[in-house]
Length: 167
Image 1 (cartoon, rainbow, N blue to C red):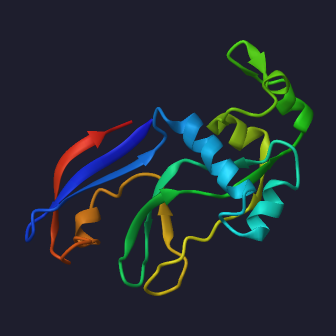
Image 2 (cartoon, rainbow, N blue to C red; image 1 turned 45 degrees about the vertical axis):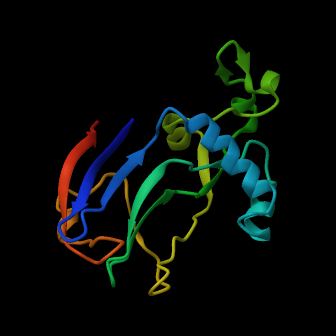
Image 3 (spheres, rainbow, N blue to C red; image 1 turned 135 degrees about the horizontal axis):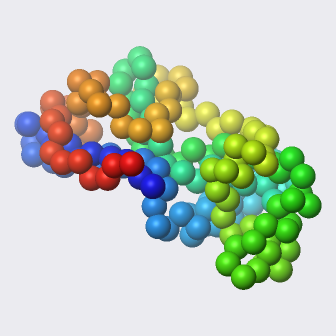
């Protein structure tokens, strides 16, 4: 499920859609992101970690990131890597009418698996492009977000336009 708002700039009228969470395309995003990591798009370290164990999973959920120094913001995937506590448990998990072993891969993973069957392998650091410090991650869009961030186009003040999704 997702959560988000739409904001509009008082100065230039540009809209931004701030949405976080998991959407209907999550299984595709999960698989595509794992494939990009395995192909080296995120560097050799991430590639090696992804190939270091069976059924490594990536946090492909979307989050809101905010720099607490300059208030630069971004929406991006979590990208933390996790390894299963017991690969045999994962192998027997059912996705539809087939097990992970029958599929030959894990189609996606759930929050329940993340919380109960996986251990953090490596945290992905989302760095502010302006300050080069690690940005804070939010699972939900903060209620007072328009007080913290500015329009990414002109720097103008933003106001809430609509609530897009809620959980």
